[in-house]
Amino acid sequence: MENRVLATVNDVEITSDIMNKTIEQLPPERRGYFDSEFGKKQLLDQLVNFELVNAFGLEIGVDKDQAYRTQLEQAEKEIRFNTTMNKIMSTITVTDEEAQQIYNEHPEKYKGQEVIRASHILVDSEELAVDILKKINEDGMAFEDAAMEFSSCPSKEQGGDLGEFGRGMMVPEFETAAFALDKDEMTQLPVRSQFGYHIIKTTDKKGVESASFDEVRDQVKGQMLQEKQMEYYTKLLTELREKYNVDVK
Image (cartoon, rainbow, N blue to C red):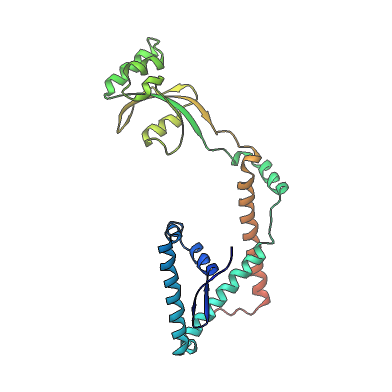
């Protein structure tokens, strides 16, 4: 895309590239506003105002003030620090072979996200819930039939089946009980929540076994990269303290 000159202030050009880079630096929720013509006009006005104040600052000699020079020196140091860190850290890498070796040593550390499938029977009273448990445990009534007959939840039409879900998707009392059950195990006491009393049956569990290396390759490499970078940074600081004069008062 052509880099167009949008305005000139005291011989300083404000281009479309400058405007686009300014928009890119904004928080994501604000960028959309400047996609409109009205938004871009407002931003251009702000950039013009910015250059006008800068020009006036030079006219009144702000660049010769000690406070200005101190801030400028500090800003330069920060830019130099960040550029140096980016340069040296970009030389540190982690290969697939290194990551594979770490994974092979402790595969149990890389479990997938735990997901379960559960069914429930929801009723208004604890007494009814206890009675339903008795019908299932002692009278041999199928869980699905009990759900269809007694449950007040719309899931009763599917025999109480709620489908698959992960942590954080159900109310805490329900989640704690459901995830604590083994596959095909049912709660033996009613579980109370803000919705009523639940009888819960966990019908499937996934993600409790270790994920494959291919599934967690990026995660392993990311963790290793952070560790290698920190190790290098710590070693570098030790060497630099010996190389340059450091006098802490």
